[in-house]
Image (tube, rainbow, N blue to C red; front, side, top):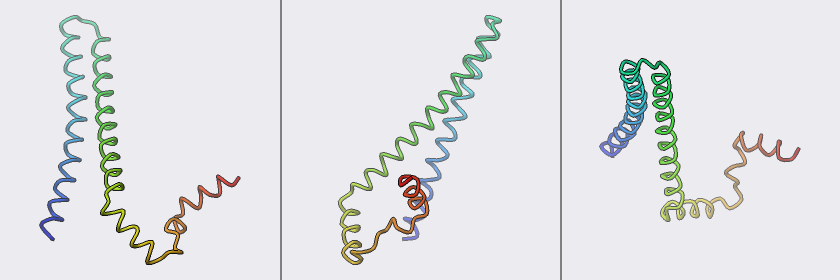
Length: 114
């Protein structure tokens, strides 16, 4: 069990590291392309345009990573094994509302009632 936990931690760390590297690389590529074109043409605007493109590419990488995580979470939610687990918990405590004690949901209910 300890090996599995360590492997899961390593995979999570590697995923975060790859996202960080892709962000830095996107900005650096935009920077160096812009700098190169500035030195070739003398047009300073090209430097700024490509720097902005690099930054936008970094945000796109973040967006893609978030979408991939959301897909993984949705796949987990729809996994039959976990649905059976939730059904078993509901059978044990049929009257317990799991969201009842969540402060955020209570606050949402206040705003929805108003």
